[in-house]
Image (tube, rainbow, N blue to C red; front, side, top):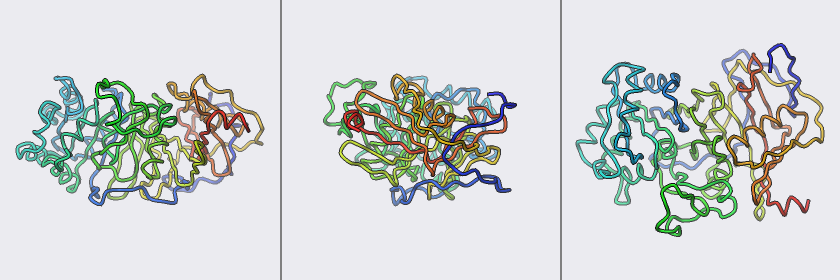
Length: 411
């Protein structure tokens, strides 16, 4: 949309003046705190990347190097990947944004996972200030560093580095492993229909890339204490499985990080800032949700990016000052046309956009078994950047109801 066109977007919220501070604070529906391990780190930073990281994404690479500190050495873990060459490409990219020799591969792989519990690896870890976990299968990371026999020496060394103010980053599987528990797999459709299914109940010959009948909730690394993390989020339509995962674990908030995007987590303060993309994060808040039968209602979502922030301890959202509230219009009873499938590539994101830019108060999407209703109400707010670019749109506290199709039809 051209900047010369006057904004006349709809939203059921009251426009208010932007305070003369860096951010506009917006209350997010989050009465309770997320569950967190008693041993969760309380210092250092996490750079959690949603996968598909472009080597040209300078803001993310620069943020990692900045958090590690001037002249700091970084380690790259290929643990999640099955590729023999995994990790060396990341070393090259990090060195390209700093200096040659800044990063090196730390040899903890699936075939040598026991190395994570050795003194040489622990010593190598403690010699670094930052780390990057590559993508692949998050279970490989957890199995290597936190096996059933107990936390490894390498894992304890990672916690020590965080305690001293270091940074741990990861992309795709390296993002999914950050919380504890973690989402181990599953699609939104399967999760909503079949819930959480134990891995031992899945076929033993299930292929690595085969989706489970429901979704998997498993042990994680426990670096991120503020909720569940998930990745490739908007691109792969993973909102439905996050809802089921939060419901199952009792955790209040889910952080769905999109591709080529990241969140920068300050573990000491709880401040979580989006980095590297205007559509970096979909925050899911289950504090006020209700579950009746197979219907899940009053879920709250916020679509954030471009420097927007979340207080991990309270769930409050802060919108970057350059974005202004959208102008309120009189709501109508129009309903936004539904996409072919709500979990297709970016369909959920596009439906949010369509609703916010329309005078309607409701938009509806579907999968085979469920109707997904997006609802603007008095708690919903939206903001857009000075150029009126849709990429700079932030939406806070949109309500989502997920109901079975037969229930929806009955109404």
